[in-house]
Picture 1 (cartoon, rainbow, N blue to C red):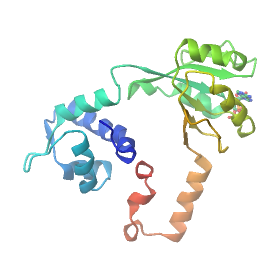
Picture 2 (cartoon, rainbow, N blue to C red):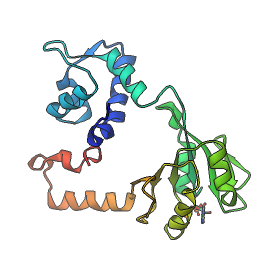
Picture 3 (cartoon, helix red, strand yellow):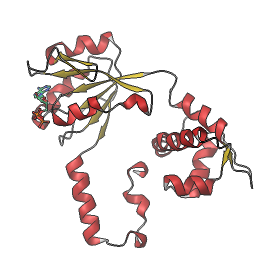
Picture 4 (cartoon, rainbow, N blue to C red):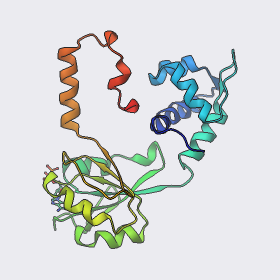
Length: 221
Ligand code: ATP
């Protein structure tokens, strides 16, 4: 079944919350509780969950075990997805040291850089390879997504090389707006722009209650 993209984007958020509920021994949860916890209005939650085949019962709510197994299956949590990090600078190193596996089944399997001081080392057990050998390593390990933390000036040329690899998705942390072939999906996370936008909102809309706060929430974009 095809889940709408806006709903799909909220899936990991729901999954994290449901996992916590399950860990604390809860058997069921109401859409109101969910709404409060994940900050998504309850009508949206009910609509989203109807796509998951989860029908909440009045006065009972949703079955936590059902939701947990649905999310785990849908998000492919039983299989570890391999991701590569390109550009082992300050931001890139922070990602390598951040243990993604702790919270989900995504693993940074390798890093790439052009700096000979970094090539051949490991950071948090992740091997750092020469960017010159990128295509070979990505294909060999069937890496499906990359995190891009190279300088913006080289982001496009690195991206162009991904076309001939197993990579289908790019999480782009550089300010460069990338052109990609239709088979590759890009999600942009421009920290400077996000911060600037937040500060603009603080100055111009000082009271979030007067605005629909969901509009500024990234899961709803
Ligand atoms: P640092 O202080 O380690 O340089 P930074 O994040 O401030 O960190 P950037 O200039 O953004 O530095 O570079 C990020 C990383 O990308 C560096 O490790 C750099 O060696 C690497 N890098 C530079 N050019 C390329 C390239 N063409 N391909 C891959 N990595 C590159």
